[in-house]
Length: 452
Image 1 (tube, rainbow, N blue to C red):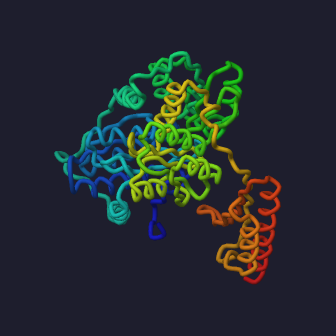
Image 2 (spheres, rainbow, N blue to C red):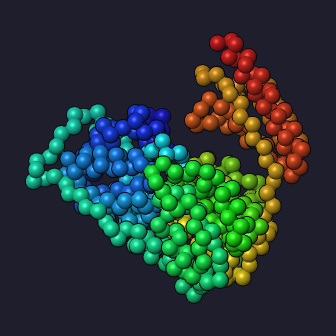
Image 3 (cartoon, one colour):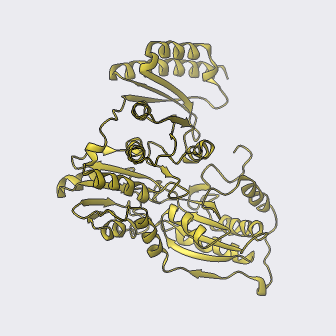
């Protein structure tokens, strides 16, 4: 991605009002995308957004740019990211555009593209769009301008699709479910899906006002959901993030089930039904206990780099269906082309209903290894990890851990920080070894900074 000017691994993202998240940039980006996409197909683009107040601004700007390039636009309004991917396929759009900053606070926003297949836009197309951004903006003739229309049935269509991914012979009747929508894009989708499948639904953070998305609620702040589950004696709690591609769950006792737990339950359920179709993909941050639990079932496990796009790439390479991240991005490629919190949670609920077990029961067989991570700042332009002293202490710790733990050292992709992570069977080892490595990394970092 180093040759990109605007697009990162997850589109364009930043603080609203600061470049590139400005109306001027969005207008030009819509136009540039329209010029590139107008070379083929139906000349139609789908636009959806989450519930941030800035969505109005960016939606209007993108629409104007696309229409000026001769592209027809279908506006979905607030919709989960995976719903936009799905509806882009359904309407045979040349592309789908998501206006969202996912789990970030309301001050941020972002723009990312889906292809007509509901997958990340091809790298070559993104580079073409970036190149077009350098051209002078023009407008097609009046007779060639695109048209824009709102699709009022978008939510209903996606609710029906989600319900279709739950086994038709099963029902959620008798289950009391707390649903926390982070005041985000699932607020008018997820509760209705669960209710129409028979559940008693208690809603949390389902009243977006443009400013409260992800504010002490949702998949990144599960305490609110935990409290409500315990208060109303619910069977399970489900929390999504602002754009609905992440999910976290809690059982009736308030124990949190993160992405690793959910991947394990979905994979085990599919394996026992003979529907897994291969192995499972996690990331380098997936808990070692997940790998061991799956291997005890006879299920292969592979790790990708951090990021759902890398999980997706490895799944496609292996020809497998299920993967995910600890953060709650779960991929079920036999059901939808991208991470979908609602559909993932439905797979867990199906396992609960069909097996007549609680979420706590379904988690049996997977024991998490204790893990500790220490962040060490370093000076830009220096390479502490190249030091022989750092390499030596890492090798020493790895030798002492053997096959009872692992060490992961990686640079952050967003800030000058080295993340030192140690996982082991014994909690004391985790803290002692991670500190031992971090101390050496910090010492070398300071030496290199002083030598600059």
